Length: 190
Length: 94
Image (cartoon, rainbow over all chains, first blue to last red; front, side, top):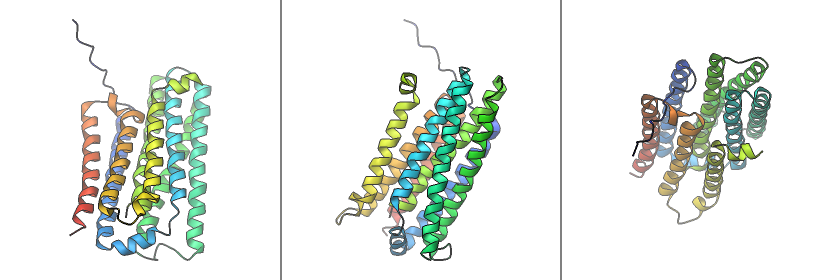
């Protein structure tokens, strides 16, 4: 009886993107830890402040980013098989999901600001604005990357180009996974 | 359409959506009911989040087919951050 062939191990994307992504994940990991530590020191304040957040916004945004991540996975697979036009459609759809996330975030911010809740209101909202603001910046960068990649699909792609697509996809998935943690941490865990 | 449904990422996506809906409902309703342990509901919500993150890392970022060093770094990050958050929740009782 022959043993199964070993699985092919391949670094997805370029090495540089992993340095950026893992570095970013460590910085956010530190933020998550600091937030949870101070939440433990002042649970009443955090719980009362958290109760003013609309969990529906956070959950719908999670679903939008999950959908966009799936679309990006399918787009990259399509490119590997040479389906450039289909891949471009999926990338643009993922971009639109990102735009939907931004619209909801802007509505949420404007609701908070119009009811007098800002970054200086208390410790919880300082973390709320810093964490969601930094993440929002990542979403905007990710959306710019998606549009750039969608434009690149119009020409013949080399193996090197596919690696660039994989790198862009990895960045977008990081944007998704950071929100997966931010949502329960800020909106649900008390 | 059939190709999309049969895509290996699709069942993973369904699990991610289901886990999100469960956490949303749990955090919004069950966890706020009187008598519910704040500690254990918090730990459950953190654990669900990191379960989802692991699925994204392994299946969407394709780390499961990557070199073992990358897999190890990702697993250490998951264990480190998830463990630290749950540990701090646990210690906050004292």
